[in-house]
Amino acid sequence: LPDSVLVQVLALLPLRDRLRAARVCRRWRQLAQDRAVWTHVDLSPHR
Image (cartoon, rainbow, N blue to C red; front, side):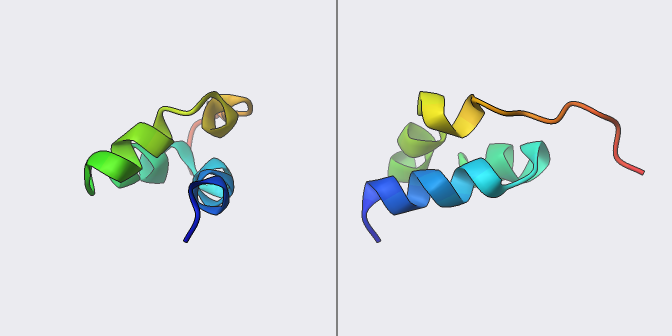
């Protein structure tokens, strides 16, 4: 998939899964650090 699509997918993931995705490989780590992934982060506790 193109990087732009992966960034959009990563942005939809919950915080915990974004952090896990960043550990998959170098490319995903780089994409997970993109500003677009972190524009909206829900820090409310999981229940």
